[in-house]
Length: 344
Ligand code: KG4
Ligand code: ZN
Image (cartoon, rainbow, N blue to C red; front, side):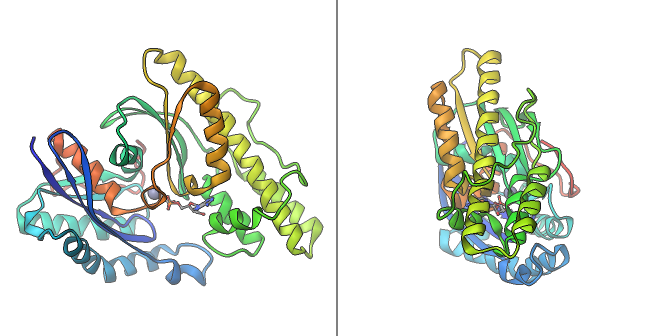
């Protein structure tokens, strides 16, 4: 397979995104454009993503975003070799907008379609930005997912643990909401936590004593709510201390689990290099990244955190997953149906 120019389309949540990524014959990637339009303003008044509004905004914007991605890349639509779009999992209305647009372009331009699993796109992002060989361990922590996945190869994934209730980003968002910090909550919690005392409140570390690699964050969220109610009305310092204590609990849970996952990797795949890759919006959190870095150092593992613009939802990761699949000849038919649920 020679060089391939791939258009990637992402519409599974509240980002309307398109990108052009080029993969050369050696597997090296170049991001030629990566255009993301966030719908934060549309949803701000509701304190969270409203699926119907999200789908409508994707309809309004997607054509323009694709045109902009092509323009910035200096690539005409009919010069692309394949069209990749997120086909799930996600909010079905939005997924349908992106996937249907991709199908229409594929049909009109007579190009192959690649229906991409959004989680696979997160899982392969590290290979877009870094030279990393399979297998590696991925920790995906976003607004919709918290899981460890053993990435053995393109299309070859093994989930080692997941959340049994809230996703980690969701927990950040809910804590931010009850502290009146706005949406999205993760960056706001992290910012205010800087002036807080992480030791003031000893919040629970759910499931930490169990050997399984699963997460649970809803009990922690409830403990935060009860603490906030007990102290109300909250001073600014109370809010900062709660945020810092919550973040400390989360960082401990995530890093202890990552250590356990790395130990399992070492036991099952002793001959392989020990690589931990992070994906998803929560990867932007420096306290969590620092805790993960420490755990990796202790085990001689390499931690890879892609640039944050590629950790959060974007078109380049979808284009890249499409490029990796395209290189293997894995294309899809125009009848491929969107999948609101689609575990890796
Ligand atoms: O991957 P992403 O952009 O969207 C999906 O959910 O697929 O992740 C968004 C999530 C939100 O829940 C947001 O609050 C969280 O990532 N997040 C953070 C930070 N930045 C974003 N959580 C903690 N600390 C941050 N700095
Ligand atoms: Zn995502």
